[in-house]
Length: 203
Image 1 (tube, helix red, strand yellow):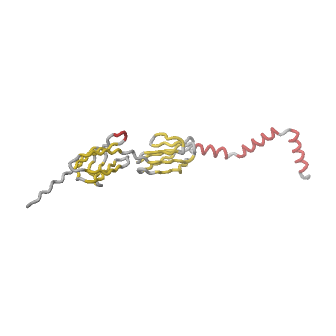
Image 2 (tube, rainbow, N blue to C red):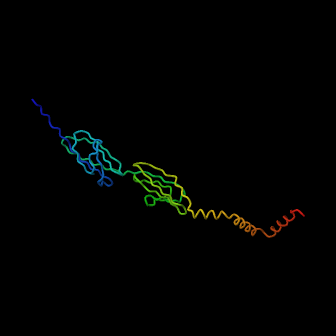
Image 3 (cartoon, rainbow, N blue to C red):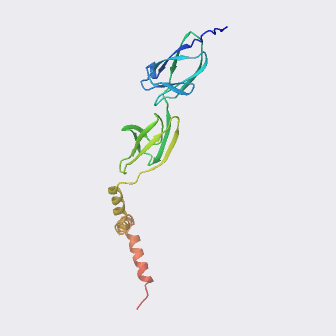
């Protein structure tokens, strides 16, 4: 005599992955129990009754996971909303009047604390009278990075002007001496001359 066992009926799971403002994520990857099973924002799965782990990931977003219980012959809908992944960046350096530009947009004067999306970014620090400095950085999801060694060098024209000013000490000393003589009364200047003559040895 053969015994008839009831046929086990699976359950149906519908998933939808959304991003900012609930908009569908075109490049979302949905996994069931750790195995990628669908690469669109909306998916349908035929699963065995029981508990399953559903996870969704997408570039630039924080992955989300949730446990669901699938019942035989019953449909179940799961909506997952992913939050944008943010990375933190702190930039500081010299001079204090320098301006930070991130990806072509001015962020403001140094120092700056920024929240940026993960990935590649181009930094530029510039200031009037100084040579600008550029750097390319890579930020991982949730990473906090500090760049505090920006030190701009004076532009060549400014450096030459500074050296030319300090290279003429005689001119400045002579000018200061003449200015001092103009402020000294004439009878005091004569007295200094007389004393110097008396102090000189006779020949």
